[in-house]
Image: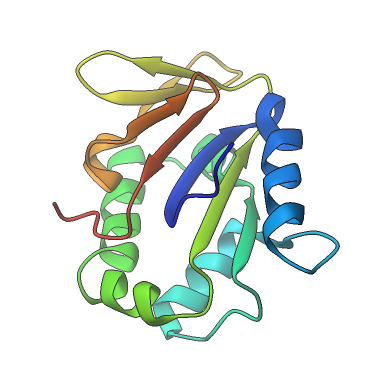
Length: 147
């Protein structure tokens, strides 16, 4: 698995490939792990991340606990869209990996969605736009989610 600049959605089945690619590229023992809440807070407040590669955990759980999925999608788009894309390109952290548990599956039709363990389908397109398939366990979108 090649490391891709931008937002990457990786199922845990592909995590070893991701970690291997990471260790080949960086002189660090492992990528920095951060929760989705802390990741969004850093982006919203434009606080620099300490490393080039982040392993963001809890993206699926965020959708599991929210009451209004449309409101969450709008909030994510507001935090990650617009000027955040330019800021992310200038920030040291260029490789953002949202690691999803093996119970979460990708559903690809007109839009790319994830199916949560409770069987709910979450459409990622309203937030991230069109994601490109890198493999069956890895989808990618550059930082410019508005296009």
